[in-house]
Image: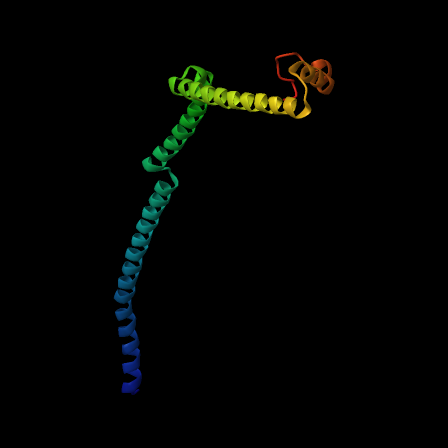
Length: 155
């Protein structure tokens, strides 16, 4: 029996390639296991980062505390403003302003009183009547509300 060199060579090459493939497979398997360990480590790192990201940071905690404090202070300001309103009548600045307003209003009232007296004098001369007759005319116009020497309530 004769062996064909080609056939024998091919069988030998198959055996050789099979034996050569085993170290390659172990090498590839080792590389894949290494990659798997690296991926698992990355997954653990990402899980830790997600956990840390989901927890409020000290900055976020302090910002919520500051917002709460701000709301409390705003409520306190409103309460203090209401309390301050109770004491506005004894405030020296407001009292001084009110006194100035009173003086100005008295001056205006005095001026209008003078204008009314001048107008009454003119009416008396124009109609040729005296002040007593003018009082009678006022009583007719204002009715029972007229009190001599006082202004009517309507004005």
